[in-house]
Image (cartoon, rainbow, N blue to C red; front, side, top):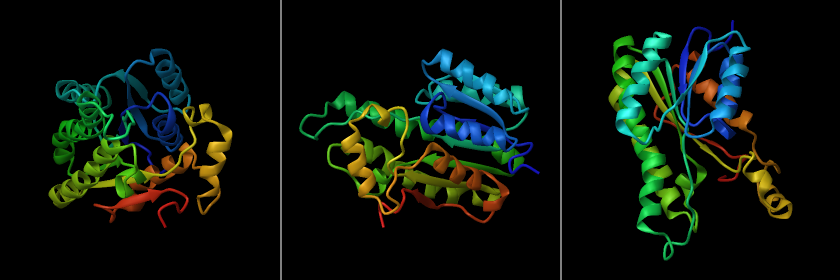
Length: 248
């Protein structure tokens, strides 16, 4: 028996990086996957084809989770197409890093909107379905930066810390209906984006981590798998650091 057999998951921002890794692991474990993307149409089509190859139902939706109405429509479309929403992974996110003295109001607002407001939008959008079902698992992608802070990332850190407060509050509100809400705080995860960085810089980061390596998208996806499955039936309101010991 696969861990997510018969469950339907929505994953935002899944055409690449961590979101794509989660979608792949979920499909392998029997979940039907509805995922969103913003502009990477070709990558989304390839992923949809790949996921369907696991014998599950998968569909990509070009939808902006930071837009309240689009989030509502997405949830309606997924219920119509898949019949249920059992898991929501709020993964979509951006960075616009700069020192506080140089960050523009626009860059601050945009990061809060995409990283934090999208979590509110999507959670509100799936809430009615999960309440009717009297079950569900919501997993929000925060960051070690949201736990610890980081110079040059006040906007990003604020958005990711906000997710933690939101997660715990939702867990308290919806727990009586068997709807769980948890957050994951990834550390240094090696993706297509980090591959473009200077190798010496990246190696320096690896050396500072107790496990002496960067994380993989699968490391994060496996933690999502645990939180999405019935193995974590008594886990809610938690923040799990997937960081190789970075914050220890």
